[in-house]
Image (tube, rainbow, N blue to C red; front, top):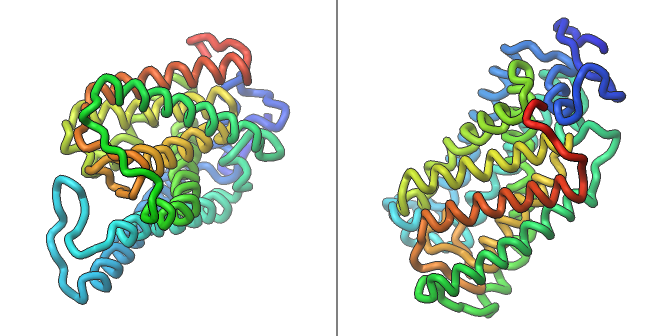
Length: 318
């Protein structure tokens, strides 16, 4: 065991002082880790992201509409006169600010290596990123097939036409960065901040799921139903946090998040999605409670797969 400059004990590289899946949480005590630093850091990143979101969205809207500021369509989340791709880029650009500000806060406010956000190991495990991405993409594809059978009139085939090919490089460039940024802030920084006071990985995952849910309630998809969509967002946040703590690293969660958003952007997009694209299929009618079942089922399966192929069994007391 050793102590940070604020007098907080943390686990060293050997894992002493933390048990199994608590290693990743314990890294929240590295460097300068007083509670007020996490408060200042969280507020700083949030303000930077909020300002960047407002600035870039306003800029692209004004350029697209020649200085006229129209009202947002509450159902689709789109602004009349703004091309969907411009909207997609405007929503994703602030992710750069979210990513960089999170890394800067960790490096200079907390004075610890940024690698501690990603893993308890000395290097990033790219295989785990691939594992999470491939497993989730295949599971999402299977769920999509089942959904098209159960609700055949809710999906419209668009095909990989010219519009799809135009979106493809933009999506492949923006989506991984957007997912990485969210994971660094929500699943790494805020989760490790919780680890300062919460040492049970199940409780930490629940709290992190609630935190992840709150900002996503601003998405236009919530028009399908506040309660079921809130459960969906919470469930995603919970399973990503649990997998992160279970594997002592952010890699699997990053892979899952990227695969989920790529599937939504390229394979089956929703007409009310905050990130509208010209995907191969379009969901024209949402079924929110069915989505709850899908997310929960996929979460359980991905947890079982992770435990089966990457880890040893875990008890509820961890």
